[in-house]
Length: 449
Ligand code: PLP
Image 1 (cartoon, rainbow, N blue to C red):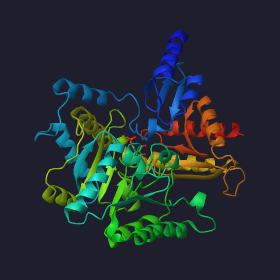
Image 2 (image 1 turned 45 degrees about the vertical axis):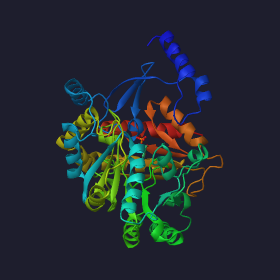
Image 3 (image 1 turned 60 degrees about the vertical axis):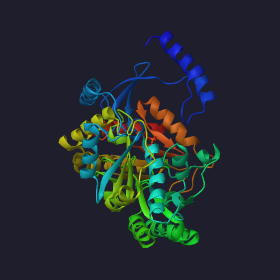
Image 4 (image 1 turned 180 degrees about the horizontal axis):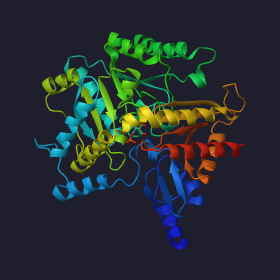
């Protein structure tokens, strides 16, 4: 791109484009980075800089950039039938085939699918379906959802309310009524002197305490990410999820796994629920479903819940123009075919995942790193002022932001949540690319003061 072309785009961007989760005034002064193309695990910017994308876009480009099969699947479907919906007693072939494929892949009895346009819409759908599920059984008072502090379930009104991000709640008068939050199993930051296992158990028991405080007869569901992504890749201690399973069953509280990040191989198995032994009644998926090539989300619903919704619910008064969009579904089918045919999830579990873990954990030797944690293909480095103390920097977030910016200068895209450097590369990353990622991360850490 010529200098003039770049400046023109930056000016138009500053004048007309509000960026999500961005201080737009500050960005307008600095000028946005314009990404121009991608190939494998790399993207290229306006100046031709080659950047290793260790964050897979936004935890989503699991197959990497430039997969022609996905573009061809979209083009074929667009030429045949670019759009039809599943309202008015009809549907399209890719929509049906994708629903069946998800039912085949998902664990347990998650055999029914409601399509949405994104992860946020999937979680909005869950809120409505679950409250409706209890209401049609004559229990409308079972209404309250419990989520977690710093949980992330999207940016729509319901999604942001279910999530526990304080900064999001401050804007727009959230959360909406009927949503409560409990603390997360964040051992590194909040575990104090407890062992991780004991801390995990205690944080799970916080759910039981909350249910008892609210009255189980008033609680509809508990929603959580298997690994809390946006909060800083919080990998729960092994003691956490078994206890959550028990509590939800005991109090008839539906368990909802938000697998928008974890789904489709990120944790080393097809679903985070399998990695952690979670037994969800409903599951939200998006992102890796199409490898980020087109927007698509879905709610997977278990047999008993679907039986009530379909059998007793009457007309389902919910749906989006793009629910089950045929082009998005065709791309999702192709993306899942590639994942299966190329045994990408298995390769991550047996080969590249363990290698990435080895290289990532070695970064824990750096004086700035208080913990290097990883599960499958998702991880974090906690930057701290004084090892081995787990105390945070006083000006939380400054050092993480600095490290992220330096990594970019080194040709590496990492994301920072406060002072945790987050890792979520395309699942197709090779061993030599993992070496490059680890070396660039070390150099960025070295240059961070
Ligand atoms: N749930 C989780 C766990 C997420 O990480 C995200 C997005 O990052 C969402 C839901 C929202 O998905 P979307 O941005 O597609 O609406």
